[in-house]
Length: 275
Length: 128
Image 1 (cartoon, rainbow over the protein chains, first blue to last red):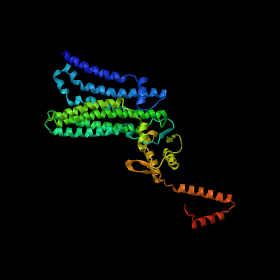
Image 2 (cartoon, rainbow over the protein chains, first blue to last red):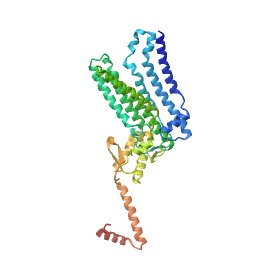
Image 3 (tube, rainbow over the protein chains, first blue to last red):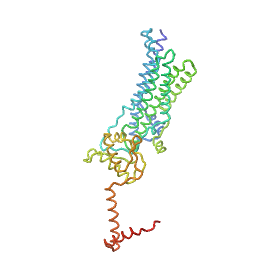
Image 4 (cartoon, rainbow over the protein chains, first blue to last red):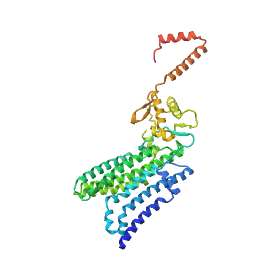
């Protein structure tokens, strides 16, 4: 009984840690690091705006992850209330919930941005492309992983794996990863520009690139986890395949972290290089 | 950075404001031939206009031969912008005025100008 409480407490502690880390204010040092990462220099008044936007986006993303982690750890809480029903909740759907939530949170952070032009409206005559904001190789990787996940899950559903009934979780995860990434990047590219030139434009473009990296990172992790789950079903008689797929899924978590936190990117440099 | 501005308080419709500024940028060479213009959705979003308004401006530029609209591939500044009839009329008149002014400056008359034009047309100078 004590062990059950400790387990539930650890899970709740992790969720609380995620919420706390996500809701902290973005200080000057963090904004300076963010400016270096995206190769921009902002005036002081825009640094405050950048800090506000970065915190808002992070709160939305981490809140979604926290909700997903709560769902994923629900078997531990059920164990304290009705232990005999706990195993009902320990399934691939709850296990993958935090990745699903992360992808949706990254999408929500981009969708809930709106700029309503005031006064004379100006727009730069520069065509924006998804490739200005994030490496297209990651988008392709998500697409390939999603297709593999969907096909493997479908094949697995027709096989004799014991948990083949959960194939839809992996297929659904693949669809959601591709859809959230694709739609989210479209939102990033097409939403109204806050300023057509100057530092305001630099901030706007860098925030787009930041959001695109979070979207792609979460999408990659979800697609890789779905592919691992699907391949595990399709090749359940060859455990090595499932093990390698799980390893790739774990590596994708590291890639997500790097893409979201530290991968350098210059929108201006990217645009100059491709026009 | 070339920008387009829309003044919502102006009596000129937003469609015409967008069209005129793009046409000017293309004619003056500020936008090079082959330059891809923003998508209708992007420009409409940035300017706070309905997509149909920007689409109408792009269609009008396409009709004037200033841009090439190519479905999903987007809209590009035309390689050789074809001046409209009104533009041609304006350009020919300006050239004729310059020529006549030069003939008069040299002491010639209108009939001298006509005569020289006929001569040049019948015996064009060898190209260099």
